[in-house]
Amino acid sequence: MTPADTGASTVVDAASAASAVPDASDSRMTPGGPGYRRMSLALFLAGVATFALLYSTQALLPLISGGFGVTASDASWTVAAATGGLAVFVLPMSALSERFGRRTVMTASLAVAVTVGLLVPFAPSLPALVALRAVQGAALAGLPASATAYLAEEVRPRALVTAIGLFVAGNSVGGMSGRVITGWVAQEWGWRVAVGVIGLVAVACAVAFRLLLPAPKHFTPGSLRPRVLVRTVRDHLANPLLRRLYAIGALFMTVFGGVYTVIGYRLAEAPFSLPQGLIGSIFLVYLVGTVSASTAGRLVGRLGRRGALYLGAGTTAAGLLLSLAPSLPLVLLGLVLITAGFFAGHAVASSAVGKTAQHGRAQASALYQSAYYVGSSAGSTVGAVAFHSGGWAGTVGVGVLAVLGVVVITVSGSLAARRRAGDAPVRTPSLSR
Image (cartoon, rainbow, N blue to C red; front, side):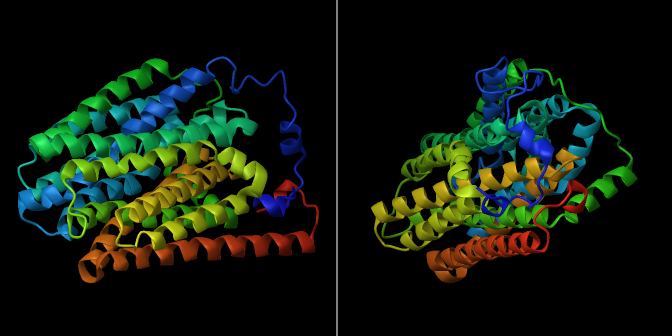
């Protein structure tokens, strides 16, 4: 498989070629090796807690709208504020992780986030709820970029996509369980009790994470100097491949954020008119995301990076179009395809960031996460506005445009790689940027 097939640089890198051969002196973790299972379970639980907290209000938006007497667009800010807070603070938190360590920052972030999660049920008004959710999102910003950087440093390169896929799979389980639990609990006791239960689940995940995660062995503290941070960010943004990966993550999440923010309203209306418990159970389709994310490594091995992205985009688009049908089974099948395509595309793009960045991996991952959650905030808000003005078809239209953006960016990356290959079949690593 050529570099153009995988979406990697056309550089012939002797170091990366050598990494394909197992090195007995490499003490980084590998599947079946010491600490790998503990690490995988710890980060899986961190992913569960992150997504369960981050989207704890998403399945409850119709109830929050009714409770505060607000529109769908207003209630959607309880989701957008959390993802927006994460997007804004992920880069500063990544800088802290470069200085104080990945495990330290992840532990502190989870501690603050779960504490706020226990306060959310007592919010007296929508503005107060939105404010608490923004703080919660800002606290959670320490998780995604730090986790990806931890894996890039502590796991052997050949196992990196699989390891990150497991973390993303934890995201999907957290997103699913949070919504299913809140749906049924809220049906009996209201949305406040429901988000309180999620807060308690997240506390348990946070404690287990801290007990299980192995201490890092390959972390080297960096600098907190603003000039160093700015230079590192500038270097990453100057890399065309990283820019494309950031845009792809944002566009995939625009689709996902819009669909799952609005789907509860659609299913609560005619012709479906489902009760809150069943609406929450719809999010069981997240299990499909768990599978597609954890198998992303095999997809890349068979199709190459760009092939896997095309497959993810095509699957997502097919699901969007299928969800337009006025039939509940077809809507559910559409959600399955959207979820599978999204999580596969996200796992491929996020793992590619960790492989592409040669320094400042936390900042590289933070920029991806920032773009990703900007996409989530945009999708939640724009998707709700589109639903308000054009119904479900409006939300689907926003999603289709975002998927087309993924395809255009991926095609442009393929063309750029071919041009580079034609100009210089072999380059040194220093000329690849």
